[in-house]
Amino acid sequence: MEKETLIQLDKRYIWHPFTQMKIWLSEDPTIFIEGKECFLKDIDGKWYIDGVSSLWVNIHGHRRKEIDEALKSQIEKLAHSTLLGACNEPSIFLAKKLAEILSQSMPWDAPITKIFYSDNGSTAVEIALKIAYQYWVNQGIKSKDTFISLKYGYHGDTIGAVSVGGIELFHELYKPLLNKSIKAPAPYCYRCELKLSYPSCQLACLAEMENIIEKNIDKAIAVIVEPIVQCAGGIIVWPEGYLKGLRELCNKYNILLIADEVATGFGRTGKMFACEHEEVTPDIICLSKGITNGYMPLAVTGVNEKIFNAFLGEIEERKTFYHGHSYTGNPLACAAAIANLEIFEKEKTIEKLAPKIEVLKNKLLEIAQLPYVGDVRQKGMIAGIEIVKDKKTKEPFPYSEQTGWKIVKAARRHGVWLRPLGDVIVIMPPLVISEENLERLLEVIKDCIIGLNYASS
Ligand code: PLP
Image (tube, rainbow, N blue to C red; front, top):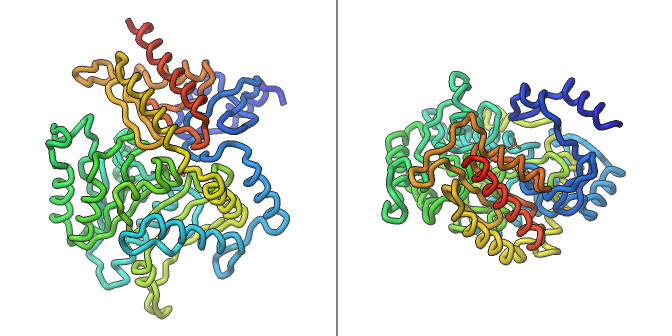
């Protein structure tokens, strides 16, 4: 179909996510028609480096033969059956594989061994919240009705997930609809709410978290966090020791720790799971995005045996977890995930990251020197560049200027596909990106930030 017709149809029928449709309707959108390795091709034949992994999902590149084949072979057997009262092969094999990977990667506390499937990051979080709440109720503890989470946190867009979110722009409006949650200060060193600096602060934000837990212990169900990197909040990389300290607090006060690794999981931070950086095992983990390499919607909420066992009982005890989705454990999605996990093993994806992480680090050091660059943050293959109007005072550009978008649009013209988070330029390419392409990606970003400099002066 002609490009113009497709655009007309898109504008006529589609309401795009996180998009001011008035602006969308006045612009010419990009239509992608092909993907290969870390590149995307648009309908005009122009190729782009996929600098944000198609919204943080792509790990091993587009059109991976192994995943294509796994899907074709599964589709010839069974596309879907339900997990409500029945099983299917791929969901069993995947659960075994995930439980092994999770327990081997995070052996420091009770390992994650039970897998509950759903189909996106937000549902993985909803399930984690419901399981955590019911875990206490099933033991006769009914006073616990509040979650503790972090400012700048993002856990998805469904109501439960929004309740524990802490991004004003996305979450404030829905306040009247939300469940009970208390927000602790984020370990966001560049804009420390407590006006301190690391390490002399001695993690005062963690002490603040302890105050909150202690004061609310009777009603606190769990702490839910994105461990090590709060991605959607602006690629906020935590100072060393915060996660470990948080695990210790949860142990001390006997509340659950939920790790939302929807964005950080599957190698993004340089380890399979971000929790590994501080030798932490959460009680509940949420995974999605990278799990199928972007092929199929799939998510997992993993729990340890202690939690699982609290749901066992006679039917009349009402300890059952009454939750499930039509597509829970979809065989196609599970087959794609198995093939994706096999590539991790076969290609030693994570072991090969070190030189790329170094390239990213060195280039970010250069970028940090540029005017308007307030802060650069990196953990493994995730990075964020915070653009500010005034480097000294950290004053941001007015929201109405959409400075992040100006840089991103310029990068797109130069063949790099990005999407900003406000004025934070996000870098999260597929893990298999070559060092050469990674350098090119970063060069383009650098030039576009410099270009902004000229445009504004
Ligand atoms: N949790 C985290 C940490 C995320 O970054 C996201 C999405 O960006 C979600 C949950 C929600 O995932 P989904 O968009 O698949 O619902």
